[in-house]
Amino acid sequence: MLKNFFNKNGKKIENVFSPLQGTVVPLSSVPDSAFAEKMIGDGIAVIPKDGKVVSPVKGQIIQVFPTKHAIGIKSEKGLELLIHVGLDTVELNGEGFDPYVTDGQTVNIGDPLLTVDLEYLKNHDKNVICPIIITNMEQISNIDQSNFSEINHGDLLLKCLIRG
Figure 1 (cartoon, rainbow, N blue to C red):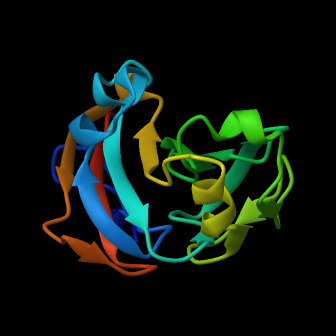
Figure 2 (figure 1 turned 180 degrees about the vertical axis):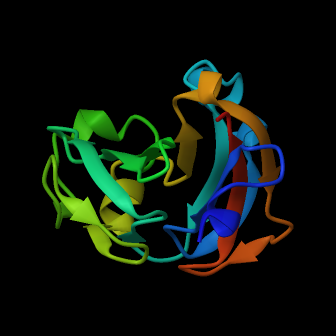
């Protein structure tokens, strides 16, 4: 079992699976400098095709933001992720979002986290792009990104090496 948990250098490997179905784009193409310039952390973004958001890792919900537009998760191996649905969606005060999880809840890969009404976001002039950010980059020694351009729920999105 430990052989699968650690690589040969003693670093933990964490696979992050896609929480969304849609088109994968580099973080640098997100039209928000906080994400594009990796001020919050590194990662990738998905332009969603539907409003279903599922857990990308096995872990615990750190925070469901009061405005329901973002969820923080800490994986069992210590990776901290932020799934941010859309840009400037905090301004919607939770309208268009239906979360299924609460702070402190344990989740498995593929568990439903929330649904979002993408048409509602678009009708309120919000970009639906979803940055998926690693917020504890100081613990990460390497990130390999998926080669997919189109991705489905549960497809491998990122492979991270976590310092031991």
